[in-house]
Image (cartoon, rainbow, N blue to C red; front, side):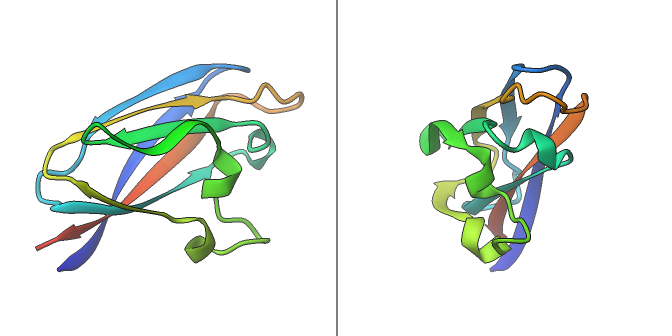
Length: 120
């Protein structure tokens, strides 16, 4: 199987904003094998939270700190990828991102949720 990636991008416009995550996995992807995230404004990382499910299966619970999913100079990508084993093939991706309302953050900024997947 080939390793593939799917990116779900969200834009945060204001402090304390809650952004719903709603997408479909790629039809050609067979299984989601992991999840990690990046943020375009590292000042917004503290207190930012996320939840995520794939195919109605919770992978990341409510109020999970985004910093635990984001590679930084202190941790590598292999340290932050949350393993998963959920059906892809067009299944639903659902979640919620919540901005932490940190003073001094410049808006808007982007969050990218990366799903690692396998494709035959």
